[in-house]
Image 1 (cartoon, rainbow, N blue to C red):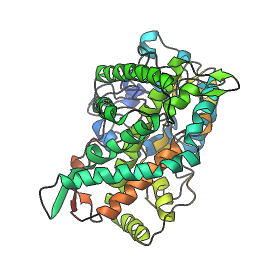
Image 2 (cartoon, helix red, strand yellow):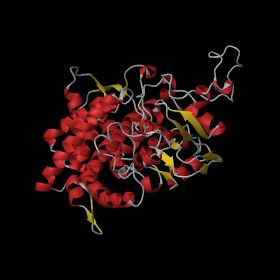
Image 3 (tube, rainbow, N blue to C red):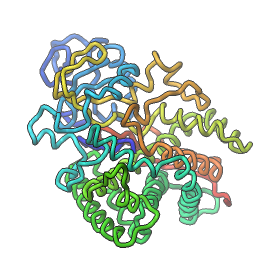
Image 4 (tube, rainbow, N blue to C red):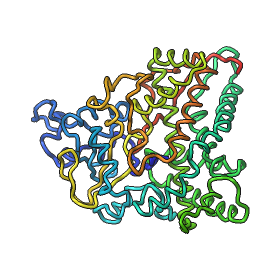
Length: 460
């Protein structure tokens, strides 16, 4: 629900488009010795190659280079669109709150065909543009005020038993599929981390349970095609838009206590949501709300499996009935390898300066949350996972007026999922070599395609 899933320019990493602007321009400083046999060996002044398979696996060394040498860096994205990457924490925080950086793609200083590469595939054709990720005040203020009532701490707390029920059911399903009494195997992404937030947000929106598997299929299409042709995502968006339009009509006739009914009935200072606005809001809450949590759970569990001492600390704390380390731990997992690598698109409405770099009006700006959250100027030992880290004002959920509306729900789901997994599968371990894992392509989100694990079967 932070704008996270804006697979704006999904492309498989490692394609020729994944090059720096300097390389595309043929600049000697942007070419490697392999590309130019007469060039000097690559050195500290050579920009790292972005958006390759190697980069997707571990982008943090490249981001460290950018923070030090080119903190506000112009590059060609996999789609061919050029944008500025902001990588230092202080600059990132400033940019996220700067209202001269608009969320409205209309401010992009490019032809219409290029503007089509900067949003969620299919949202224009499906008339789903009027959501919180694409608008500025005053419309943003009005819509956020109406929708925020669904995400109060009280409402989220009331939803906690349902999240726990879903979590236990999914683990039960995994256990029941096993054929061995001694060892179990599972893909934690597709069998656990993916369905949990889909079913949770569907429940919150008021999607009938008999229809929720359709949403799971459409969302799965979005994830599977996150690094490939936009057509697959666009088709899923169209199907989802058609279903939401039908559901909104049904909820007008028979409203319930769910979020879609609330959106339809929403009124504040005499202002109402239009049908298009209600459909767009329901769409983005689902679209942005599920993949962030998929990646929070997947990336978080993977980080714990790669850091056994930290994982043991958390298990010991949970066994003692404590919650403090779980709470700080989930925040640290969000900072260390969070679900949102880059904040969604912003466009300069006028010439401005970020980190000493001049940005022209109409230029796209992408704040690299993953780089900012490992800035050594802000975090002590930023490349170390420390579940008890207290000074942890990470930017994983954004900052400013676009701070993630669904952050309380995502935290609840992340804490519940991780705590329950560690309790019910205490010896959970990777099945296979970490080098064989693949990260999904795309620009905004960071998440594993699969997470194969093994565990000893135990009774709940």
